[in-house]
Length: 218
Image 1 (cartoon, rainbow, N blue to C red):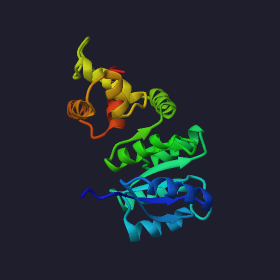
Image 2 (cartoon, rainbow, N blue to C red):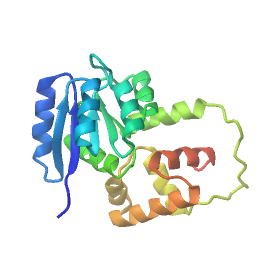
Image 3 (cartoon, one colour):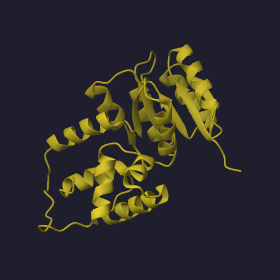
């Protein structure tokens, strides 16, 4: 039998945690193993329960979510954090991702998107809403390159279909959404992504998007 994804909820609002727990425990693939009201408590709970995924608010007392995410990333690399917050400012987005978060969602996100983010984080994949992805890519575009990548004109390591898929990933589309838009099986999307990762010599979606940007593919 498939083991459920073990989740730790971290938020200083007890009512929000309660609603989130009710929402998630209604899904057979999820198990809420613990809750915490601040980052310090989250570290203690993570040490005891070793969750697969942590849903982390960013602004909390005692120890904030960014600092807690950074510590969790260092101490438990197999535990993947998703920032789930009310703050839509670039400062919070970039700090959360730099700290090691695998996703960044606002608290008004549709439940289905939250489920997709949890599945993605559990697989070690990044999950960002399209608006966040666009801002991350815009920030990346402004960064200077130490050594510009030299790619022969009209040449790319990716096929046309793979280019199409990585462009959709850059816009924040999930595997399911890509499959629906391209009218192909979700397993086929996964196979294409695996090939993309191999060709670009990266390990996840975010790195693939960044590498594709460097190569001028997107």
